[in-house]
Image (cartoon, rainbow, N blue to C red; front, side, top):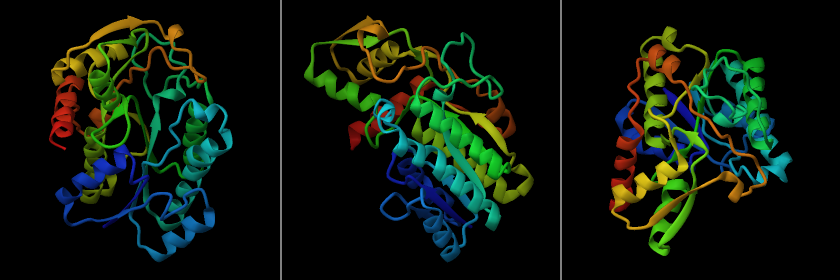
Length: 290
């Protein structure tokens, strides 16, 4: 079986690359913008024509949340147009598509974990383009899986965990927002979950259950709590002060509450989802050894 991974150099794509040896019978095609322009219908069709593809995992995304407010065309191409093209091509050749989306499709004003059927109401360009991508996929190819995730971090790339580790070495004191609550997602856990879904499908096609799903690590915390845990587990001595989001104005509005309900993906695919702090420790150990 051959699996195409788009956005291969990002956090999630890199984690899938790390896990590929566990699935030795599969052939992986790792692409990024330099090897496959997924915003081009012709380029995608040509690539699909020259490779026998059974599965596509779309990890590619425009994730610069603030820049998206002024770079709407680029965000739309990557987050909305590209998923539509991939969905269409997958349908034409009978390949399965797993697409990664975001908690930013919600307004962030809830007080209980968001389910897949809750009303979407993105507050910025990033969330709007990601929601458009979801809708395009379901319109072009309903036999697809969409996984919304949040607060993604990894030992690869740039993310909140690595930023905190850097700042912890540079500063004696730091302010971190405490009025934004969510669930961190260790990209390695999400990568493993995605490959488990693929693996179940190779055993029985009926195990591929299309639809929208939510995935993050278990538990709910604020960014302040997350930062405190990073420093404590890393043995970094720094004073962390809780501050309001208003003290850190940004071009794009952040969700104040983005906890995702994982019951559906856990039950449908029999997944065990790790607790956020346990996964954070695993990631910190990997970063330390790197």
